[in-house]
Image (cartoon, rainbow, N blue to C red; front, side):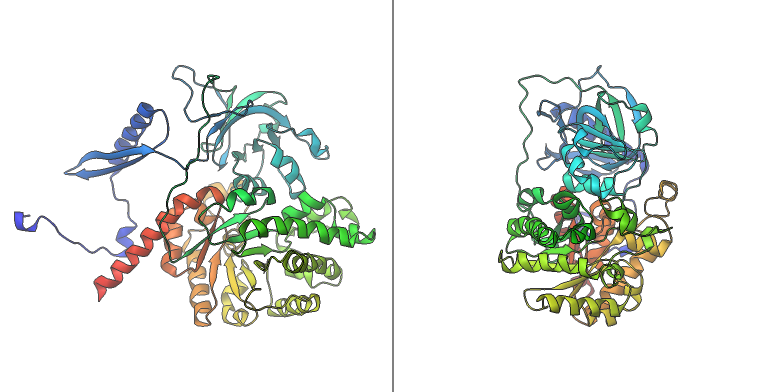
Length: 518
């Protein structure tokens, strides 16, 4: 290149832009440099670098100010540094890293059938597999470890929403770990270590600082499951709540099968408690919209609730059984479902929280949605400018009949976990299939289905968002969504700050690419 041509502009195709940019040896070299920088400063660092003629240069390093995965001890203090060199803790168990963060505490083995009160605040909850009725105990715990489960199992989802470390699929956790044992859980690496790192008494806790974030055309929203975290999450730079699961209210605020409560004449109690939980989140985010996903327990989960065995059938495969909308419209459950709608109405009218919208899960037919629209009209919930009805796009029928479904709803929200499960025929909780790579939202078939839905819905002027896990885990999947024209992305709380710049950068590249083509 001559001196008059020191600057060149080279256009790359979309495929080229997604290829690995550095050879493996340079990536390893860069990782070592980053590790040395973190050792020097004693904590996680945001490092900027460049490369010229094959040589790497560090141009800037600054502390990470939005890190949630800090080390917490039983004394309630936090560490931002790794244990001192020469004092390495022994790894005693490995599993899948389901939710990031590091925490030290005493083990509490929980066996099915025990009182949830046995789990004390700050303990490490260790069990075979968690279920929705265990949420109160999970909120008390400092971390969760399970024998079974994959990246989208109940324990993983709840832990990410609570912002606590979690390891799933550890196989022998309940055998190797013992109640009272002091351990350190590293949910980022998926390991359990013996004991707790030493900490100086005068060491100050780490702080989380706010920082400015770029504006994006794609709406960024947040997933909220546990109401008591709503006030904290409302401070995030989001446009609202893209997914609030009402199931957590049943487990935390009610703790009994809805039909069992109805049989005892406790209808108003159920409505009032649901409305209270809905109101906590609605108030925290007001006037930003809160999209409340109505109940989506499976029959086995309903049976585990007190009083549930009387009302629930035994199903060979509850995951694709009597759940979601098919339950709402059935004669056996219809009246119980109306109590959920009455709770929504109470939150909207008596608490004046008109930012509460609703979303239907596991939609299979147009007729289901029409029937539920009629039920909402009976209750006094009518779709309009301040009350929207969204459908979870997780059963492939919605992809194939998107334009018809557009006529009976106000928007779609993609549930990438179930959509992947049903397109790939891969149980989302299967450790075997997960490790073999069958359950992966980035597979071409899943991306094609999502693009089909977005294109069909936009033809009818209907927005499409996503509230599944994939955008919170895979940066390249987030870029795909933005390029596909997604209207909103709802993220796990701990990934909001780091994802917004990524979305903004992708949007800027799209604009530049468009300008170059003109």
